[in-house]
Structure formats: structure tokens, C-alpha cells
Image (tube, rainbow, N blue to C red):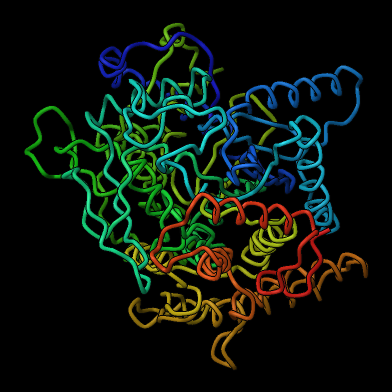
Length: 607
């Protein structure tokens, strides 16, 4: 979730009072970092992945799979193991962090991967090590799985171990209790700031999948739409698990280029990794979590949404905090002004300050857009900081903009370089799948830079792609705007892109479009790599190609089909406790290699 801070949080009213101070000092901190590192060159390619796990507690007697709230103890033991390893002077291979929901754990490699293509072979091994390491601290009835969202979060009955009733003073949800919120002060403070700023709970309505016997859903709550799955807390979004990749570029120019190009790929990769078709115990008509994230992470007031005249707030804002990017930022000649066509609002005063201090127009606009947001929290002892040695005020606002891609400046006075984080993929069931997608993303960055590829389309088309990406079976039934010639730079804008299937984008379309995988294979042929590395990379790319072509299913389609073919399913869109139990057991069996799932994995081995 970003910066993990400690301290005593101030009440929201005081945080709001200091908002301008935090924004101003945050920009000062960015300028300090920028001026010290803008000319830095030749940072090594370093990169890593981030997987968010959920811990399950089984009640086999009652056939109930529940979310375990014992994760704080598990995390304590995992972090203690890391500390012991460091004390011995040994290499830390895996590292762990808390996440928003107390049933979640974030796992990352202990040290970054390097520029050698052979390091890609470490990815799946490290993912397996993470799972095995966490398993040591589980109870006999517990399991750790990678599933994007828990299908029965917020259902009537027991979905937590131990059980707690909903509607507490923190989340104020009719469906989930406060006890799922991580006790770490950072998450408590962000939750309080979010709710206080918004002034009410979020309103999430996801269309239900209409099966043969589905009833039109109705609710007494006036916020709930008929025929929709209603949710009332940002915990439904922040409690999802995802798969991220972070890449360190050799300089700021390279990082800005990767930020732009990967932003275009966001919706494509979301549809490729679709894995969340069930919400609050109902099959939905969507396959991805992103719309839930977008709504659950939206703290705009009525004034900021344009529903009331501006009086207490400063701007009408056209996007949620959790959304696609607002502006391209690369200084590359292929970026045309017409591509930044969303005209998103930005803070003119911050923009002028950045320009006056030597930041170029594109980067200044990007930063001044992100800094239209209020801080969500402030710790009492961090109000006054040394802007030359701290970036806490900067990160306070910057890291609470949860976009599909994040452009990450170096921490102050460190040897870490300019980085880009790709944030929109859904976590997959098996380590093999997660490793395949992480590898694919890293190889995409290599061909983008090696062949100077140009994926630019107008940001409005990226946004349109995103609304398409989370539709049911979008991978096989929808087309996405994409650039027709990724090697060329045309003079016009309108004729540069067209709608393609993901199969065409990934695998190519005869002689008209080469396909991203074929460009990667071309790149690999030009590199001097050993047979073992070439073989394993080939397997990952073969899997990606089969997923893109529809020959194997997304996790969302596989889950949906599992539910609909379950003997106890009544074709009414309802995922019962027993169906959910069998589904989670099946997911665990697949990820352990104990159950074959050819529809999901073909003949690829996961163990």
C-alpha cells in the first residue's frame, strides 16, 4: 500500500488544516530528490515482483472456508525469521509486509533480480519459496492462497475465523466488521482519513450475472441498484490481492518512457489476468476487480465530483484516486500533445513552482495533478521535516494515488534509482502463472527500450479500454484500441490506432501486426542465452500466447465454470458456503500441483 509509517495520527480535522503545508513541503521534497538525481545515469536494471496472499481457515466439518484473522501472528513470525537471517549475515531470500486487510500478507523477493536474463528463472523458484516459508507458520487447518478476492467476503453467516459481526465504528459497513482492518497505525489512519473526507461510505454496485434461475436482486438500501451486487466499504477493493512488478530504469528518461508505454498495456494485462468474477457471494457480470478498486478508492466529495458548486473544495476532479493515469510524461519525440486528451485538472500553483524550479512541463503537470489530492493522514511528530533528507510528506500524497502505473522517484540520499511500478494485474492461482506474467512484463520492458517501441494512443482510448477490460470474458469477446504500427511514427493521430483482439495484440495478425510475443522472441534470438533459460522463457511465453488466444481459460472463466457446474449450484447466481468451500479447496489443490486443471493450465506443470 506504499509507505509504512509509525507515530500518533492526528484527527482528520487537523490533517485537513495542514493539507497545504503537506502539499507544499511534499513538492519541496520532490524537488530536492529531482535536482539530486535527474542527471543520474547508468543505474543497473533491478526489478522485482510483489504478490499479495490471503490466509484461509477451513472448517471441514461444516464445509466452510473462511478468512483467517490470525495473519498478524504469522507475519510476526515471518519477519522474525528475516531478522534472524540478517543477524547471521546470511542472504534474505524473501521479505514480508502487512497489507490493508488483516487476512492478507505481501511477499516480495529479499533482493532484487538483475539484468541477466537467467535471473528470470529465479522468479518462480522464489514464489514457491515464499509460499513454503509462510506455510511453516500456518495452523493445521490453514492454507495460504493466491486468489484476487474472497468470493464470500461480506456474506451473511460466518466468513471470518474468528467470527465477528459487521458494522463497527471504523468501516461502518453493513457487511464486513472492523476486525478485518489491519491494526497497523498506517492503515487505521488512512481508513479514518478516507471515511472522514468522503463523509459517507462508498457505494459499489456490480451487475449480477443473470443465470437461468437468477432473481433480480433488491435491497432496502436506497444506494443499492436492482440487479446489482451492492457493497458499502472500501475494504471490498483494498482487501483484494494483486500482482505487481517494479523495474528500476537506468535514468529518469527511461523510467518516463516505460511509465507511458506500460500505461497503454494496463487494460490488456488486466483482461489477460482476469480472476475475480464473484462478489459478496454472487456471480457477477464482470471478471476483474478494477472497477471495485476505482469506486472503493474514490474519496472525492460531491463538490469534487461536480455535483455541487465548489465552496469548501478546490477542484472538480474527473478521476478517482484509484484509476488509470491522467497524463503521459515521457520526453520522447513520439509523444504528441494530442495523446494527452483528457484535460485532467491540475494545481496551477504547484505547476508554476515546479516549472520555476527547472522541472519540464510534462513532469510538472503530472506531479501537480497528483497533488490536487488531500493527504489522508498525518502523524503528530512528522509535521516538520528536513526536506533534504525526508520524503514522507511527498509520499503521503504520492503513494495514496493508486494508479495502474506508478512513476517512482528515488528515496532521498539512496542508491536506488528511478523506477516504474506496474500495478493492475490480478494475482493468479499458481506460482507458474504469476511467474509467467511477471516474466512477460519484464521482457516487454526490454523490447520497449531495445526497439524503441511506440504504443501511444490517446489516454481517452486507454480509459475506454479499461472499461472494456473488466467485462465478462473480455479476453475473448471484446476488442481494444491499440496502435497499428508499434515501430513507426505517423504524422496524424486518428489513423494510428484501431481496435484489435487481445489475441491479435499478443500473438499477431498475419502480416498486419507482429504480436508482442513475436517481438519478444525476436529479441531473445538476438541475445546470447543458454538453452535452459531459453526453454523456460519459451514455456512462459507459450502459456501467455495460449491464454491470449483463448485456448486456455482465465482464472475468472475457470472459477465461473466451476461454480456453474457444481452439483449444488441452482443456476441462481448464488455461490453458497459449500460451493465456496469446494472452490477454495480446488484452488489449493491446483496451486500445490495435486489437482490438474487443463482448462486453466493446459499441460504446463506447476510444481
